[in-house]
Image 1: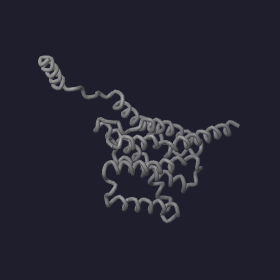
Image 2: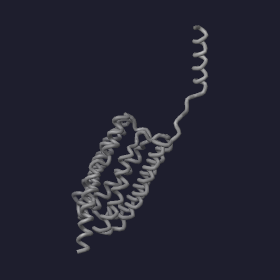
Image 3: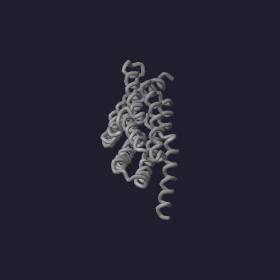
Image 4: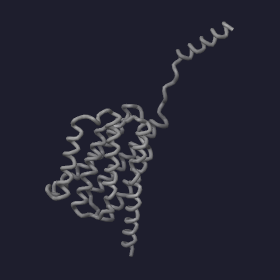
Length: 231
């Protein structure tokens, strides 16, 4: 009875996680479109995210794990594709010749795993790389924000959802398969997502804004005096 209740709780959390991930990157996409800028967002970080999410999705799919334990990954991937489009567009890289080549190679590799042309055993060796990939991506996000001293293009809502979904996934994976590789990935991902959130929050809310130059103020006072003198 207790086991059934735990499984029911895990299934409910899985459903809520998937539903929340339907909108995970949407605030960030809308934010970019509104700002018309991708300052503070590194393309390298997004490519690492896409690679990591793709490997984990294929690993779960080829091992026939419960779809509800990883459904958010393909959902998030679709949103990252859209987000990457806007980042490339605002950074002026969309028309680069290498872009269609990379897209073709990426989807060819994914399809090869799905239909069994490439053996799924390869994914078992690649999954442990998802933890450093995910970590590196988030560290790159943090570095980009700090270097630009600007987090205006970063959506706080997106990263709040990221932290919460990672925590919930840690529990559901433990209940469903207790796969150590996946659990380590979620622990690291939760910690670093919180780091990105904290960094973005600091630069959006508490970062010191440039003060008006004194010279401009003195010039304004001088202009006022001249105006009064003429009167």
